[in-house]
Image (cartoon, one colour):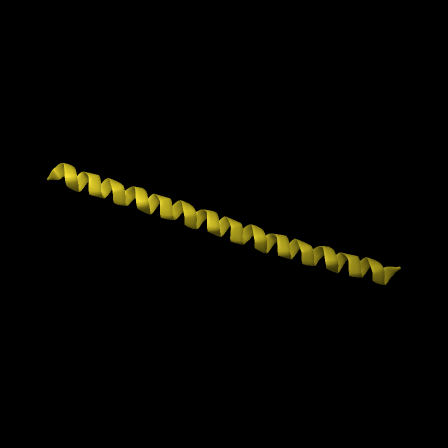
Length: 54
């Protein structure tokens, strides 16, 4: 009986670790996309400012 409980607990722990890794990857992807959009806006802003000077 103990062995079955141990296997169930181990399996559940593995599932939770897998979910946590997936969530971490999703968050990193979200943050990377957000940073890319912010950088794009900064580039456009700089281009407009440069064009306004000339």
